[in-house]
Image 1 (spheres, rainbow, N blue to C red):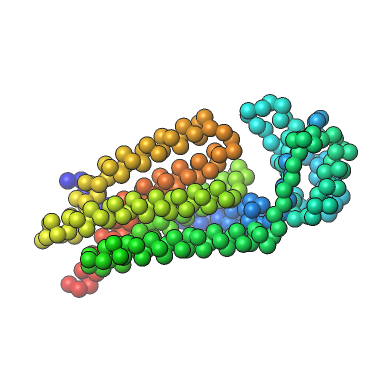
Image 2: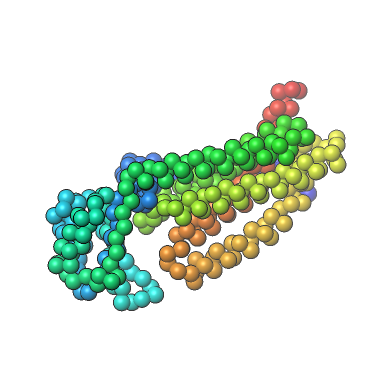
Length: 309
């Protein structure tokens, strides 16, 4: 039988390295931008303008117009939509929160500089208060999910000795996946300007459920095999359980991976960031269920037996 669980320390070290790299990326982002990753308007508040000009303009010209209204620290990006070559004069601008009157004045000033296609130009705003509420809600959503999952696993495995360990190991694997996703979005924010938005939270919560579900499948087979193979070392029982379950787990996950890869290759630009982050999270979730949650459970059990011995 392939000795998968017995090599657990290599998996744990590899995961630790990946998490540390992600934490370094977030630390660098905090040092350079003040946040672990680029936050969208939904979290920090502000105004965002989708501008469609009827003629060519420059980033500097747009900045000069916004500066007239005290908006010196803005983010200006030229938007290229592959589905419509006529959008070559479209720009996206994000500024601090301004009221409706000031935003209208900015639009008028831009229109005087270079005529705007007012039917295609739009802007929206989110107050800093609402942005803070969204951030708090996201934090509590992840925390609540963690508590509920732990409670469910402890209840489901209540007849297994030390049932709390199963819940803790599943949560650690889940946190591993969240940290991997955060590291990736931080890295992408530094190099490609990706932002954390509501879709990122959707991806995180999806991966939370996915990761825990996969861990439960592994743990359930361990629970079934413990009374069937009494007298065998715990490590051997767990290794057998993983080998018996891994093919079903991978077969289910590969179907989702192929669909998401197809969307990445042929889907719209607006969903590619969400799909990319979700794909990375699901890959991490599949990995962590097999190579983090289960090895941690075995390591915990062996250390306990060693102390008792």
